Every structure is written in structure tokens, then in C-alpha cells.
Image 1: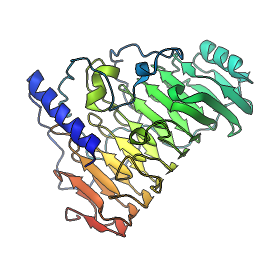
Image 2: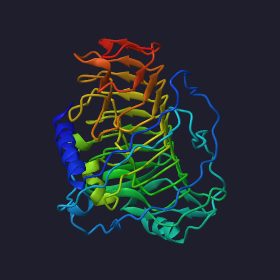
Image 3: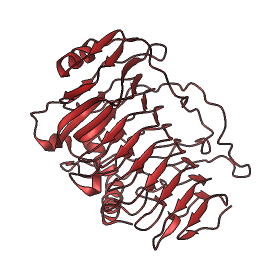
Image 4: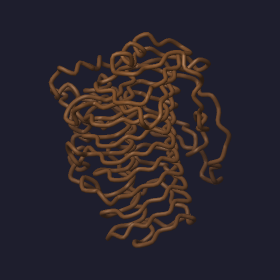
Length: 393
């Protein structure tokens, strides 16, 4: 476990004791039958919008207003208990968003520079399709209007359309701020503290983006963002501001930051699908799945750990009931895939199946800490390390 994880675990345990809440035990489905990861998708029921603090997008605000996760200033507040979800479906068995690729419709408006893009985002409504012409768009861009399941809002461009945040030390290049049902497709995001930040988004798709040269993490679903798809993106060169925060894809928030981003409530960024992304040159984990998240899928991604310096694995799962399937990783500093228990009852009941790990380090292909009810299938392939600290099944 990294030094950051040990610090967070201590803070988290203290917080649970101080608030005096009892952790509710989960009632898991029977383990007698193997889960079927290929079960059909369904349209999820959208939960009510949570109450979360106002998140500033003022580029003139001090950098502390957009603190990275694991670095929040809670000013004495204590995060609420995070009971695990009773009767949660087995990994890959719950309602999940459709992860098939989307195709951009004809444009209803075209942006050619930062001003016209800001105007298009401001005036967007359900069914709007914004096309990005090739060129550089310098600034921090924010969407606050929601589409609908039937009429999402589209923002589409080619790799030559570049959203440039102009500073890796502050701000989000593109922020879905409580904006639901968006389709972000095809363009490039670069040169911000964070690349794409999604707060309280539902039913959105982030597909085919090129995200590179980012101060911290590239794509982050946060603050109860549920039922979203992160698909076929190319992510590289993260952690240029601080290596410990250089994740490729980040799901949820650390418990130490719940009071900063989620009104001290658990960040239940559930049922998200992270699929077929190519993630390389990240200084921290390619994918970091936080405590409080349940029932997502991590499938068919490729990870290159050649630049790892602020983490010791490609994937760290601290949530519950995740399916980690058919991913391929090469070169790590210690382990390939990890689980950790940051809060009691979390980091459990996850299934690792069909993954290929070329670790070439002193650790393990799958390091489960603790093992609990996490499972490593025997069809995982590991070279350059031992398979796991648990017996495969």
C-alpha cells in the first residue's frame, strides 16, 4: 500500500469512529453461480440529484478552490458513514448503461473559437449538437444544461479540435457541472490541471477523446455521477503537476474529500462503464476506483505503466461489486491490479476475470488487500510476477 493509502486509511477510520455510525452489513447474492459478465444492458432508473456544494469554475479563483482528490481541506468536518449497498447485484449483473459506440448527428451549431464554443455551451438545450471545427480553443469550458435520455446534448469534433486549458496548475479544461445526458466525442483535451471533470452527471458518454499533458487526472467522474460510459479514449502524460494525482480515469472521490466535493456524503458514483481505453504515461494508476462506488465495469482497456511513479499498480479498486474483465497491462512498479479497504466493508466482492498482466516487477498480478470476497478467476494470465495472494477460482 502506498503512503497516500495509509494516510487516507487512518483518517477514514478515525472519521468513522468519531461519527459513531455503524456500518451496515451487505447481503450479497449467492456465490454458488458464476456471474455472467455478458448479461444484456438495460436503461437504468436515474436516482434523484444529490445535494452537493457549488463547485466554482471561476478561472480567477485560487488554486485551492479546485483541490485534487485526496488533498481536500475539510476544516474539521467528518464524512458521513458509507453503508454498503445491501443486495447489490453480483459484478456485471446489475443494470448498466449501453456501452456501444455512439455516432454524432448533424450539427445544429458550429464552434470555431473559444468565444463561439462558450456561447454554444451556454445556449445548449436537449437535442443540441455542437460541432467543433479544427483549431485551438484556449480556456476553461463549462456545461451546466442537461439533455435527456431521448435527446442528449452533443459536443463533437475531430482530434484536430483542441481544447487547451492554458495551465496545468489550475482548473478543469472541460467541466460537466451537474449537466446530465451529454455526448463528448472525438476531440482533444490538453494543458489543464484536470482534463474532463464530470460532477453529478448521469447517462453521459465520453468517447474517442485524446487527453494528454494534464497536471493531475485525465477523466474524472465524481459527486454521484452514475450510469456513464468512458469509451475508447486515448489518455497519456498525466500527473505533470504532481505525480500522485496523475490518474488516467478516476471514479468517485476519496473519503478524505467527500466534505470538499459532496457535502460530506458518500460519493456514490455507481454503475459506470470504463471500456476499451488506451492509457499510457500516467504517473499514478491508469484507473482508480474509489470507496463508495458500486457495480461498475472496467473492460477491454490497455494500460502501460512505464511512467508510474506516484502509484504501484495499473488499477486500484476500493469500491464494491466491480467487474474487471479482459484488460491488458504491461510494466508496473509493483503489482498489476490491486484492491484496498479504505473504509470498512469497501474494496470487496470484486471480480477479476480474463485479464492479461505482464507485470515484470516484484509484486503480484492481483494483490487483494484484504482478500475478503474478491475473486481472481483462473483464466487471468500473468507473466513477470506471481498470479495473486489468493487462490484463483
